Amino acid sequence: MKKPPSTLSSVILWSVISAAFIGPGTVTTAVTAGSNYGLTLLWTVTFATFGCIALQELSARITIASGMTFGESLLKKFGPINGKLLQWIVGASVVFGCAAYEAGNILGAVAGLNLLTGASNTVLTIIVTAVSGAVLWYRGDKDWISNLMMLLVIIMGVAFAALAFSQDFNFANLAVSTITPVIPPGSEMIVLGLIGTTIVPYNIFIGAGISKGQTVPLMRVGLSISVAIGGAITAAILMAGLSIKSFNSFEEIAMAMSQQVGAWGAYALALGLFAAGFSSAITSPFAASVIATTVFGFTGKWKIRIVWGLVLLTGFFFGISGVKPIPVILAVQALNGLILPLITFYLIIIVNDESIVPRSFAHGSRYNIILIVIMLAVSLIGASNIDKSISATMALQEPSHPLVVLGSTLLVLVYPLYVLYRKYNSEP
Image 1 (tube, helix red, strand yellow):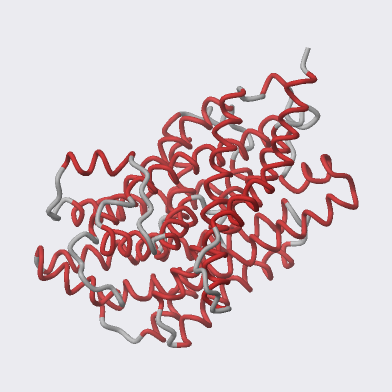
Image 2: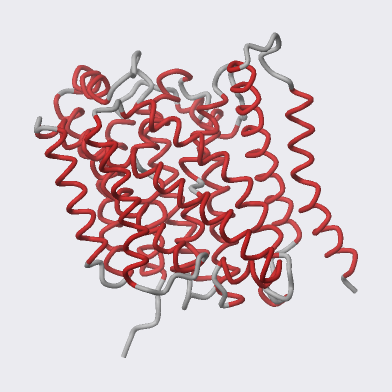
């Protein structure tokens, strides 16, 4: 007889989410933030962690309440024609993000192994890709992957916590920076990257897929603890970058760590980087396979394997290309930050539809305020980043256009706010 799920089993199950978002992208972006801006951007990690919990809870709540996948809920809400179109728009965007992430995951895992062994990057890329493919091919049930991810999260946590607390910092400044929003000039892309590397779009779909069979209270506990641990590790990585003056390669970080705390620092970084890269190298293709089944409606085993195989091969080709990982990884984090408003947009609309989420499963009105704030923040930062990129590309006289950014952001919020207005004004 199967044991009923417990709090510990729920935490282990949801550790897939924290293992997925703590990848080489997190290491690169958080170290860059700590190196360039000290503790100033630590608040972004706090915001992103709470945002991750809120959106993952929302996605899981929809599945638990309705029994529908994300794709089925889109069809239910928007009809067979518009719903099918939206399935492909949302699904294709996130699968593309999975492929982009996989490039950084393979590069990061290989970089960590290279620091540990000094072996050829080409050989290491083949090994990491082959092992990842074998795990995905013979993965069995989701419990096996959850246990593996939990082990890798523990390895990352110990390694990066040791590096963080070897740095010179003030606890009072640490506490203030954790809750004080500041965006220094030029840091917009890093802020967006920190959000994009924590609230990972494809995790929304993994969360919906693994939430079946759980109750809302048990899901909340497991999810919150797991993601909070992931957020703490991200903060530790940022702190580990405080005394790194130059960051153009992982070798530079390893050298700096070795000089600061001894040879063990370089080994801890390498081990943590490998664990981050390998765990995410598995979960990105796994997420693509989940999207193939829950959004596109693929049922054939070989169709699903082709989807995750293409994502895995994307990382492989980047790995053997000799491209420098740091610029690729930073660009990918910002890209995924731009996909977030789209995902948040649909989650707010679907979770507030009582034909999909019955009132007995509905969240309170305060939760909707939190969701609107999250969407406002990610949309505002994303629009600002796009505006500056366009201005730089076209060599415009003004480097930024705040009114245009604010106007476009508010325009995105019009429909979700209208949905909420109708909901609360039609209630008896």
